[in-house]
Image 1 (cartoon, rainbow, N blue to C red):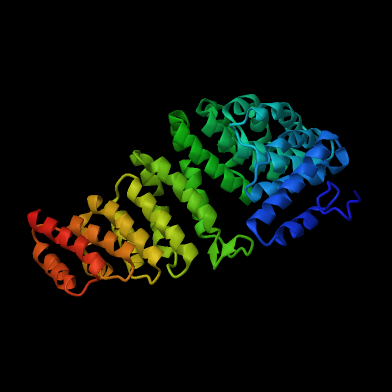
Image 2 (image 1 turned 120 degrees about the vertical axis):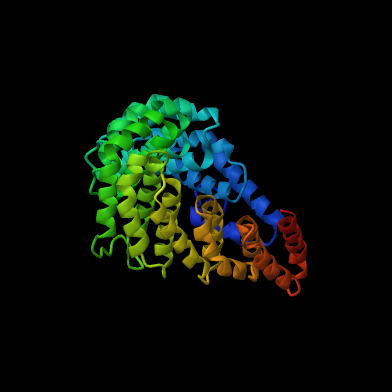
Length: 418
């Protein structure tokens, strides 16, 4: 039948198929349309028609996203990946990432193609292979292809180095024993000026620290000072429109650096001392009236509370959380209450300064904030403040919602018995 007359022949374009499916009035009509299209694609696959392979795979991905089975097209992905042209490889790798996952045995058949493409002369094909490997590689593939990825961490093009770093994260998570192979090239990337490479290198080093004690000690010893300097340069950097969000210089890199410093400072007094000044600077100089700035402050507080103690810094962290409690945004108040629950064990007196604000949160309209604030009040109760705190809670009991009265009464009874 002529493809113009038949909306479900393999010759129809993807957009026409989408239009036909969207025109269906009922679920049964849609199922029938998908069945016809799948039958046409199967016929084309059986005929081994290379002209329509690219288009069939694009259609299968759309059908897969609608939730219908597309396992019969998996081998077509491998054929597209094995073809020499970039467009075919691109659609093949996209299909591979969408239609398959690491649990499927057919994935082992693609390892050789991936190896060839990781060594390809065309850097865009190398990039496709790295993206696919970073999304779906299994432990066996990680072991087979780790040397290629390790080599690409020193590739001339920064975009390939960036993709190789992200791919390395997947590999070390799948096979932690390979961490030591990536340690040297990963720490070398921390000296990069290219933003994309630097941010992925910081994330790679963070994950290396989590999977390997040796990597943690090495990065702590060799890289802490450089990371502190990088964060200092970033905090003092002039306006850069490319990475600026609401007047904040590159908040994503700020946050990644703070997370890595948190891992390095935890349990080590020397590393913690070297980052005290920059944490104080980030905590005091970052404005708190923007979402991006609040994200940086939150990570800064978490880092201060995790590293080895500096009482002045902890007081600064708790004062930042106190400001968060006065914010109109419910999400910011909720994360502040969560962090204050952790801060109570470190410095209960500093948290008690915000007792009035916390009690106001107990009366908040949002149920989750009320419950979290009530738990925090319960933790804060001691012999000296039990009377005024209980009096406040009892007076609120008369006016609070019926749903909340049970929780509030239970906590008041617990406080009295405590």
